[in-house]
Length: 207
Image 1 (cartoon, rainbow, N blue to C red):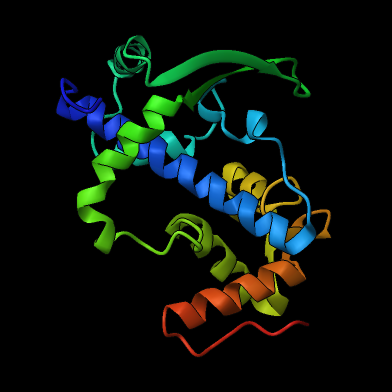
Image 2 (cartoon, rainbow, N blue to C red):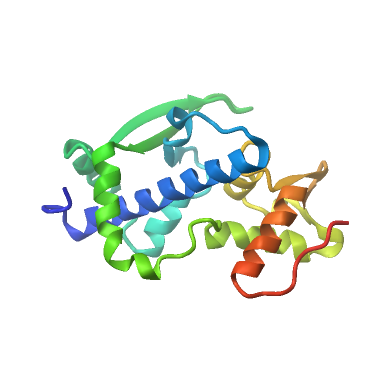
C-alpha cells in the first residue's frame, strides 16, 4: 500500500496517521477518566482546513508546514491519496456567529491506517509515548499551570488548542472566568503523569 507513494504523499499520510493515533489515545483517556467517549464516526474525521480568512492553521496544516510541504499543491496530494483508497474527504459546514463556515475534513480508511502504520514501523522504538499529548498541546497546559494563580487569558491560547483541550475535547481546560482558562482536575492529573513520565519531579498543585 505504501509502494508507489512519492515522498510528499508519504509525509501527508504519516501526519494524518499520527493525528489519528493521537485522537484514538485521547478517546481512551477520556473513557478511563469519564466512562464516556465519542463514536469513531465522529472522531476519526480530522479537520484539514477551515475556509475562513481569520481561521488559524489546523494541527494538520501546522505539521505539514513544519515539514515544508504545505503549499498550493496540498489539494492535489490529498486527491491522490483519496484515489488510492487511503483517505476519504468531505466538506462540512459548521455554524458560527457570522454564518456557516466550511471545514475540509479527512478520514483514513482501513487501508490508509495500515499504510500509515507501515510508514512508522521502522522508527517505532523512537516514537514518542502515545499516552502523552502532542508537544504543542502539552506546552499549552504547561503555560496555564505556570501562569499566576494557574489561570491564563483566553487570548493567549489558540482556538484550536482551546477546542482540543476544553470540555468537548480532552477536558483538561475549563473557564476560570469569561476571559481566562484554568486546568481542570483531569488536566492537573494529566500534567502530573506527563511530568513523571518525562522525569520531571515538579507537578502542578490544585488551587
